[in-house]
Length: 435
Image 1 (cartoon, rainbow, N blue to C red):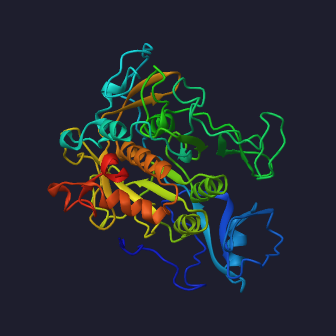
Image 2: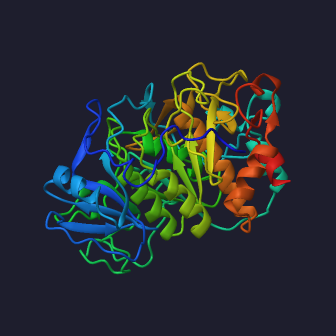
């Protein structure tokens, strides 16, 4: 499916290189996003403190005087584009309506799972009951097993000590914990479960403690892959997913494009095949770093990025939001539905910009400190889709990101009232997607 053309694009080398930041948008005043015409070129300028190379000519350049440097680079024949690193803008991130602990249960099975909170997972219902046919799919799978799939949750972090998550966390086998050494040479020290791009060392390198100080990323992670049939908490949708936690979204939602792009690249290079992107912003400043990162990791590493459509009750075919509105074959965009089968009142929509729908209202999942609670948003619909995608990929590891996206859309449950809301007219369906 082809999405709407991005509203702001590069208009030629110099025409796109404005020197002043938009007065309404905050920038990171320590770094610039630079794209070189030839990725093998290098820049020499006294205002450059350090350079982090990304891909395809993209560099993050650190400086004590970005205004001066940006002006000079705008007239450099080696430079294709130079942009500020804008913040998304502070916004309220969904928090649990309330939280609780759950008593363990190792015997009683509900819908095929002994996890005590599974009865609260209405997304597990059949398609006739507005669910994604999760329980029916596992009954059909029987003893069939799949391969491990690494899923990166780029969010507020993950409580990797949570009783229902600690056993499904991705572990970087090439790294020795807490020894202060980059053992595997991937550029990150002690990255056992992922990285934190919000806390950087003196050289500007992302650090390794991605513990969730909010709750959003932990909630997302549980929906995808909370340990099944351990008599504890809930059951995640995917049986063989491993969660790579990447803290890139501040508690106030004010992420930057550089941090997002670095997170996506880290995930891809370290084996993630699906990235959960439950965040977004209402402006695109003209730079294409995030869009081109999504394209790059899809083509080079076989990664599918699954993004929330947003919670503004808007048609994003007209009022674009990012990264959902980028046109990319390796990007899948998700709207939210209720347990009554309608689109959630808060959910964004768009037959061009939004691909498929999934349960997102009153979703029960893990929260920090061995607790559980309900949250609502397209942020919750996205991990429901990611969980299904991970289970499909586990059983069909040869699928490309484009084939996985196509399967999720084509084998969704068609709902007539979604036909003017999402491109596939459908609700994600695990049972039909594994057949």
